[in-house]
Image 1 (cartoon, rainbow, N blue to C red):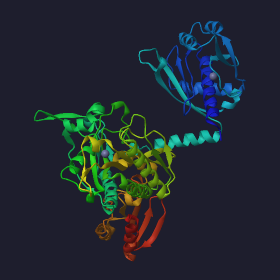
Image 2: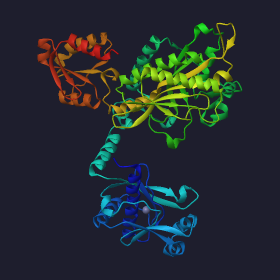
Image 3: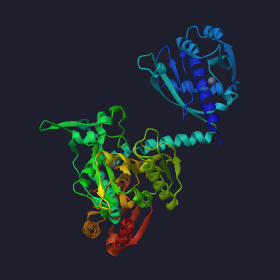
Image 4: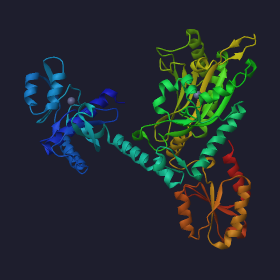
Length: 569
Ligand SMILES: [Zn+2]
Ligand SMILES: [Zn+2]
């Protein structure tokens, strides 16, 4: 295993290699900086004429030639006077030299190429074979828009050909299975100028959201949640009490009703709190668990919007648990069980669980924090799930457990949070009547499993590469007939399957069977039920799976039995 430092040296050396190739090809280019990044490297240039995408292969080819020269990479300290002389025509380097403390600066050299640099390289250019230039983009000197615009060339480099090949495959897959592309191909959702950042779900997309909702709803009912629904617009006073007005105002949308200012909710918590406060609560009601599939709106800059990953309106599978601090541990155990169960259904079994503890400048007493963190920790220990303590990373109003999943392409996503909150019960003066008859303050827990349905759907689409599991597919089966003569038989099968709530369609086109199969494959429908003359005669069905595998002579009862088994939790 290579260390991060070794990787950084390789990447930074590749940046020198890039600059070396560029000055050989375009000698009047001014060099600025070329650091290693967490993923690769870049170099910022001021070229005489702007680089074009077509220049990249040319530059890459020259880089390979320099690699083949096997030039030793050396590094030495030179006096600032000498350095200023070397760079007398390069204001960027002169500025860098001035900023370096002391009388000397570092200089890296390979062949007749040199670059101002504090060191940390591989031994020779021959070690830089496995690189790839990615793109040209605009940048600014010292990343400041008021400064000289520059051109950045970005690349990646690896120690082995295999690592580079794996990287290229990952990038290719990520593009191929981009959820925005799949969303169009599978007719799930779209975006429109008329509502920038607000997703439109088509029938099939909505169907998947409904399946996700009912999957969760059935589990919540078993765990004594009560589902509520609260308004998406609430008056400013409420948002002042909740603290959103002070801290989140720039991300909220406002609107007047009868001369009074309202905000569209960016979170569902205050609505839940008003339900809690609608009547006196007794300790006998605790833990009180209120769930809401709540639509929220948050203003995001148009530049950061990204398909369903980053939108301006989304639905959270929100849940708020009101309990005593003593009940926290039991609730945490239940929540961990619930969250891991839900995620497992989507084949997310490789979970990273983080416990974030008390940060500086937090609110609430030491005793309360102590008890709450104990409860979370003991809960985690009890379930036997491995977890990592993230010291001091909790919110100022309470500790948190977060769940991070890993998808089929090795990417990590945070899904599932258990957030303890001492702040809102205080601000909204929440209480319950304890067994002693005294009023006590409950603790509040915010929890979400999917987080945002929109983002979770995007993760699922990419994770499954569009091949959603049978139970999650908006169309589970499509019946295809060879000729119209088989339509009456096909209709009978259609009715029988629908009777059992299986999502089934009949291909009504008069296309050739091969075209019908192709269409179903493009839509990634799990089952094709193929009916020809022989199937009608023998009262059977040929089942063609999404991957092309076929099973012959199945009865309609067998098909229904299998479908129901797959649909069952
Ligand atoms: Zn260097
Ligand atoms: Zn909440």
